Length: 183
Ligand code: CUA
Image 1 (cartoon, rainbow, N blue to C red):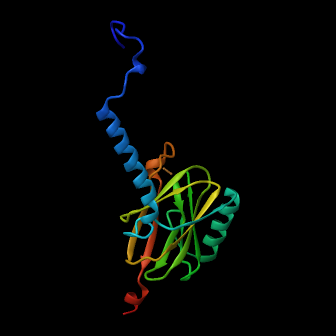
Image 2: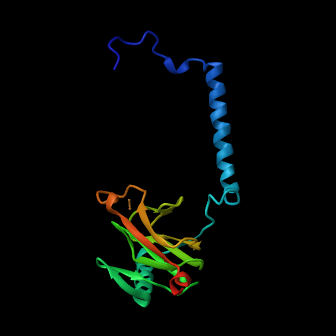
Image 3: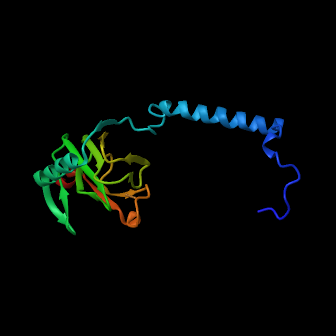
């Protein structure tokens, strides 16, 4: 708040400086370039994922995930089922306040169609330590073709603020290499 009232009250009628105009133009052009380059990133550097998206009723999606988890459950981790689907099938992951459900156990080198949706709120699927980030909305079902290339345990965090438990919203994908195990 100014102590004294401004000398000229019509401040918005100021002419825009030339230099300022140049910066506005540069920022606009750069923004447009980045916007259209999003398409290129599907092909260059494997940055943008090419996903399919469908509309879905959250309760219907939740039923599909429950059914999937029941069918292929092989274990349990503190109340969350560990699910090991056969290679190549459609696999389901549900984001909700505040967890990624269930724990998936996948085979290295096999491709899966990973379905992603939310039961309640907007969440951010972030697979650690890779640079895979997907916005997850209730009402929309994303399908991503996923082929794990490394064995190990991969954490999933939520990178979209979703309330008081946001920082506790985690999940897990376990990738096993059964060819290596058999040796
Ligand atoms: Cu879910 Cu943050």
